[in-house]
Amino acid sequence: MKATTRRISALAIAVGVTASGAWAQETPKRIGYIVNYATHEWYQNVIKGMEARADELGIEVEVIDANLDIAKQVAAAEDFMARQIDVLVMTPVNEQGVVPIVRRAKADGVPLVIEGNPVPGMQTMVAICDYDTGYSAGVVAGEMLKGEGDDAPRVMNVGLPLLSATILRSQGFMDGIQTIYPEAEMVHDLDGGGNPDRAQEVSSAALAADSDIDVIYGINDSSALGGLQAWRAAGLPEDDLLVVGTGSEGLAFLNEMQTEGPFKIEAAMFPEKIGYTLVDTAVSLFQGEDLPEHVVSPTTAVTFDEVGQFYSYDGTSRQIQWDGINALPVPEACMKYASDL
Image (cartoon, rainbow, N blue to C red; front, side, top):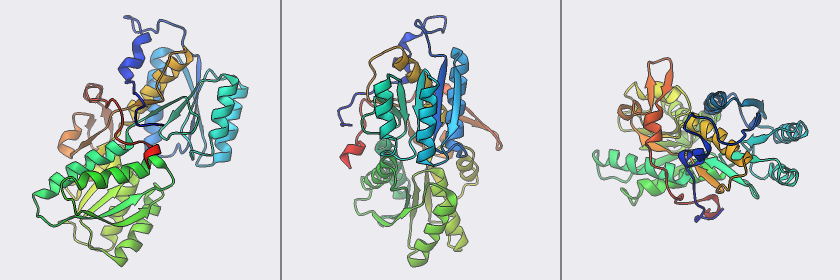
């Protein structure tokens, strides 16, 4: 996918909607979604967004969890296609493993929407601009640190090198913070597996080797929180530490941010918005519209004081604020794509 790929926003996708709120053309009756890991809060909220939009349009959404098993994902896709699903939506367990499904769907004329990570040969993907998301968080982090001294920050990146999307987030974060601190250094570049237990394990080992760290960046909230738990388990002081998460996956980042501890910045990705846009994209694809390769969903870096623009939060639950999220600008093109790595 080239950097010149044009984007289309959720608003532009919805041109098929009439003034009464109904689609001007026939809509699909069934959408099949194969999620890579349904027990994760991010995907649970993606599914909530899909179901909410599908209910508005009278569409049935069936979800199958691949549970990080590529063979199970392939089998689920084959099952959906055998049952003549109207539109197939898929979050890849890994990008290369689902290439045969992309080819099969194209050959059989099954509309297929990819979520999150680009797959060779895909028709359309709904995703954020991953590099831009990390970059904006890095800039905010650098600006926040600027008032605390001139020493170049030392960063522990709790990453996930399995996916190009998460590699881009980490790269973007470092490039962003280096606009403020050109000498900022990534001291630890870790594979946290995208889950809190693995993230804590590798972070603990890294901090035992070198704990002279100013910033913990996580490619998702589980990674950032796992790194923070490792820091706390080591008994290290939090006064001068800055933790930056990514995703706005669920309640965990909100719970931590409200404590006024070191978790001060969230690169919010709004999973409910992703789910809503997936359904609109599926409908447009079903109706034969000419869609771009990448349908961009907006992101922004926020502090806890700014979260209320996008989520109401009472300590035990959250509710998305659509006006705030829909007002966010959507870039014409991402700063970098997986093909630029």
